[in-house]
Amino acid sequence: MIIGITGGIGSGKSTIARELEKQGFAVYDCDREAKRIIAENKAVQSAIIQLLGEEAFVNGHYNTAYVARRVFDKKELLEQLNKIVHPAVKEDILQRNGQSAKPVLFIESAILCEAGLDELCEKIIVVEAPEAMRIERVIARDYKGDASPENINKVRARVRAQENAYASIPQKKRLTIINDGQTSIDELVQNLLTNS
Ligand code: ATP
Image (cartoon, rainbow, N blue to C red; front, side):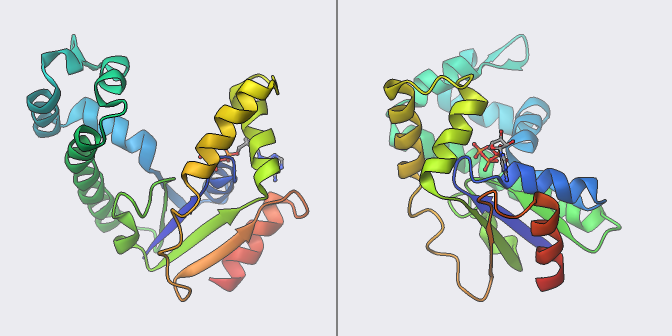
């Protein structure tokens, strides 16, 4: 069985995923695995080169700065890039799940629905926390705690861009975790395991 873990930036998806891993569960970090697939999969590499040019790889390494520049503000190009990477990730998850001796594979992704990975999931854990708390956490994590108005605005824009990303998850599939600091991560995971 595949169970998704998703939620907005700073909600605590990775924190929950790490706790599950610590408890011995199989966890697939979609972001990290997508990077590995791009680094290893020749068919994916050729398709990216065809789309973005030879500069997409330098000495065999993915040139993320170049790719980010090329797709910045170019929705169609980004969509085409996603059409190469997302199906490869999907296929890899199915393969991993098929080979796994464990009964559950948790897959963590901020873009679970956007990437079409929600289709693979029997249940989806949506991690939630109040907006102000999420902004505070991201400032602490990514901006060395520099809560300047400029940084707050940047993070808020990222938070709000994802606002409706989880609306399509049907209630019967959804397991909500409120990670607002009132309950320890350990307890949140225990509750989740009892209810899923
Ligand atoms: P992103 O989408 O940006 O990767 P995320 O949803 O995976 O975010 P995490 O990286 O797990 O979020 O959490 C964001 C930050 O908040 C991290 O530095 C994490 O340690 C911290 N954090 C998460 N949950 C809690 C909590 N319950 N109490 C205190 N800090 C927390």
